[in-house]
Image (cartoon, rainbow, N blue to C red; front, side, top):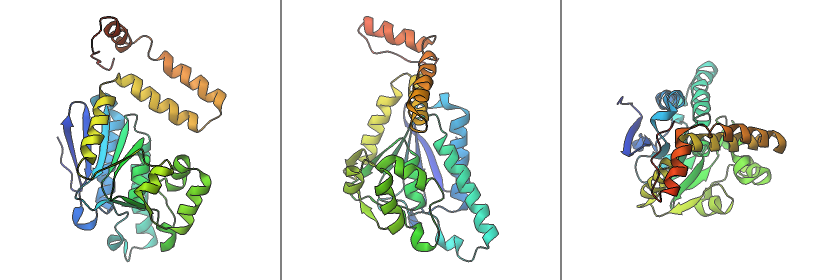
Length: 263
């Protein structure tokens, strides 16, 4: 498997990929290379979704998931250099959001600015008790540009999102949980194990089904109910002629665990 400068990609268990942001000496801050690495990794997932059934993304070390953009690298950039770098980040985020494979973010510490935006690209978030979140861009004369103004309102509602975005104030993992942004708070030492356990459950289900469910929910959130219902039926009909559908029913009747092949 290919190695990357700023991220590691491993297979800790069957059908699950673990992507680790790996710049712990700088709070896993996102520099240009990390943008390029994540773009390549998630482009690969989009191009060959059958090769994995669930993805977990986390940060190296115990303090930070990702502290956001590497402001030391950005110091002194020309406007053109800044925009060129941000275009890489935009493409990376689009690849993450467009990934058909279910993604779990295991937020192991601070997730600020672009780091919080990365976590919001996941389908849901498990977070350690010491995790903190913030979209601090407004305090730096900019604004979130990696999906923050779009994904956050979908997670916590428009009014709560505007308060977070307009103040730039950090908030706790407990608040994130109460507001619906975080699905589960975990002890730091068990966070990854809990995320992988859920990933194993997802990976044990029929992979065409999980991908179609993800796509159907995402489509429905961005359209009216009638159009969403029509899309759901199209997604459902994709299941009917599959071997996995036949295996699921057969296994139920034979009182055994199904073995899905993704076809």
